[in-house]
Image 1 (cartoon, helix red, strand yellow):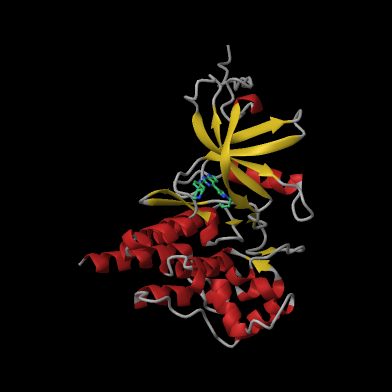
Image 2 (cartoon, rainbow, N blue to C red; image 1 turned 135 degrees about the horizontal axis):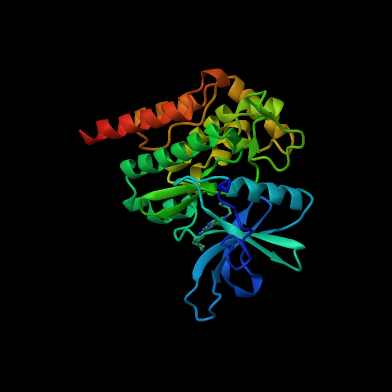
Length: 308
Ligand SMILES: C=CCCn1cc(-c2nc(Nc3ccc(C4CCNCC4)cc3)nc3[nH]ccc23)cn1
């Protein structure tokens, strides 16, 4: 008889680890707001004895910007990513008879990088910041190998798993580069985080891994500014542009100062080698920007030098 290969049995809902039943999902507290929705801390407690695990649950908040379709894409994206430096997908929870869906993810206890650095600036030194930077770099390099462009890399979207581990989160704006191109052209730019955008994103809505590299440079700036509100990228750019400028013309002014080679100033006490990395990420021409692999190596080198 012909030996049969493994026959994949359809998993029952109970066996399928990625199905979370709403009746066992106990709301605890709010965690934050992302693209397309809000994130809540819940305990998944099927035994009903509070021994269940804590999870982060993202609920879609349909508004003009976001749709169920966008959210479904975010779920599909996250469920395809398996990397130590990217927040883990745990599953989905259907409620209202499969009308609404929530995204269930691992809960990272320390919250976003912004809050963490603001509250722990005294015991986070250069080495730890470079460790965080290299982890974000590795996560982005992994994304790039799968031809994903994050499009919203910013400290607010990096979460702290422990004192020595950060993870990239919020893949609401992530797109896959088409097989025949090396960029993604966005038709309807919603509320865009333009102060993290590369020039070609502002001018042509052209997104690529090299535009993610530009955003990584801005995240380095946030890191080495300890995410201090007083010198965050938006405030520094608006000081240069002039606070009188309002609305849609902001992006034109931003494009102009970037074209005339103005860049965010080095954060206070920032090591020159690190500011050098930021400047590389902010090379005007995307072809001349380093890739995440090269950035990762340069960060390791700085960490080695720092050790001697
Ligand atoms: C990615 C950014 C936009 C959307 N977003 C995602 C999350 C999120 N948060 C957490 N943990 C967390 C832990 C403590 C705190 C506290 C709250 C009270 N003040 C101090 C800080 C906040 C968050 N784990 C997560 N896993 C997956 C997502 C996720 C939050 N917002």
